[in-house]
Amino acid sequence: MLNLTPSWLILLLVVGNFFATLGDVVLKVFGEGESTFQYLFLRQVLLVLILFPFWLNLPREKRAPGNLAVHVFRAIISLVGGGATLYAVLHLPLSSANVIFYTSPLITILFANLLFNEPLLKRRISIIVIGFIGVLIALRPEEINLGAVAALTTATAVCLFNLSVRWLSHQLNATSVVFWTTACTLPFSAVLAALYWQPITTNLVILSSGTCLCYWLYHIACTYAYGKAEAGSVVIAEYSGLPFAFLLGWLIFNEQFTLMSFLGIGIIMAALIAHTLWEKRNKLSRSQLN
Image 1: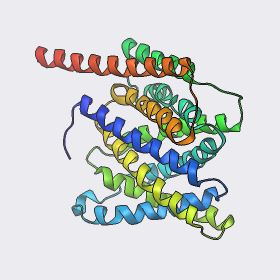
Image 2: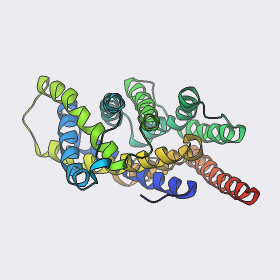
Image 3: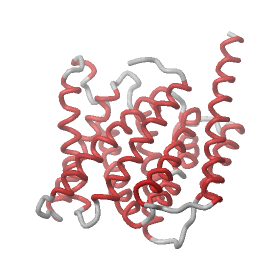
């Protein structure tokens, strides 16, 4: 695969976050009344079927799973995050759910330090905190409920899912990583789905297939970006999905926003731009010194 610079990796994450937000829209439109575990099982089966020909087309050495224990951990995190996301999106406005989802970058910086000893650089911390302040300003919580708790669970799951790819070899192909992690979800999700099985509906098919495609594109972007760069150098791009959530919430669900909402988004995007420019300038300075 291409060896992308941090700026291109950030752009890759921006595109990935657009598809993640689009997946949330599919959840909100088609998820009401469907069995959570049945949805997760069918989505994962579809994803394995989509990935299989791509995985099979890889050279034999790139098809290896690497550390299966890591894939099992990522599989469990994926299922927890998937269930929490469905609950949060159904019980909160799309914009409010995504505002809480986007506490994930701050959580990621902290876990990256705890798990991988990544330096807590002052400039990175300050930009992340500024972005988090924007999240708080944009958030309009009518009440603190289980939907908000589920959204925070999603944010933590996204953080751990993205960072855990670092426990796998950098030589592994991104498609192979997603294939094996998804395959490892099937035994767990199959048992849970069997316990709550309902007749398959058209909504369930659209829900499973639509989110499968959107989240697959998101996970491919994240797997590649977090596997090639320090989390602190690209994680701010995770905030880019928030404007998408506000825009789609307004266009599709007629969600209304205040001046504070736009102020919060502006602060978040300013942090993203400032961070990108700083990382680019810092990389240029290092290259000149070398």
